[in-house]
Image (tube, rainbow, N blue to C red; front, side):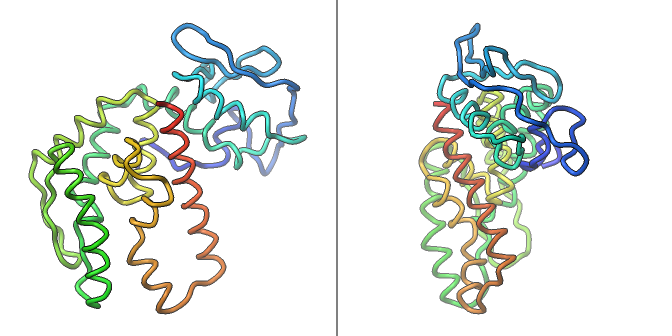
Length: 253
């Protein structure tokens, strides 16, 4: 999504830091969290670190602050942004999503208009049956739980969805706070599905389960033709991102 960059490793570091040219040495010893105002602050030796836009790193729940604090506590001699995806999510929520909520909700809603759960393969029959069996319950869940009724297509030809379904998806997104909205906006393109992202955000699906549902066609091709090491590495990274998002949503409560 244009307003939500992927969980890129460099953003968790201080503004202007570029890993290829400069490494940020660990400058703190103790990490904890403390109540501050209506939220919970991450503290490094008693001081609250800043986001890339120089805002204080304060999260809405103790569990979410603990998730971020754990990343800072786990750093070695040098800060490694690759290992700090929750910090990345928090910084994005504070610095960016809070400023562009309407646009972010529009992008999430647009995925409902081309949700992967609505596009069954044309062949082979075994793949079509697998997709139908796995995806229909989640389309039904979206309709039953949220009134998001999506129409199914076969093949790659686009089928427009009802405006009401798009509007309901957008309204659900806007009802979230900045931190949950950031998670939803990250999950939606990762999974190619607003429905799966909503199910993940609401705890109806776990991260790994949502990810596997999103890649039925890909997994089918792997079973037919095998998978090379580079592709397996990319898949593992995407699965880990989905699992991190599950922890993120759970921590937000």
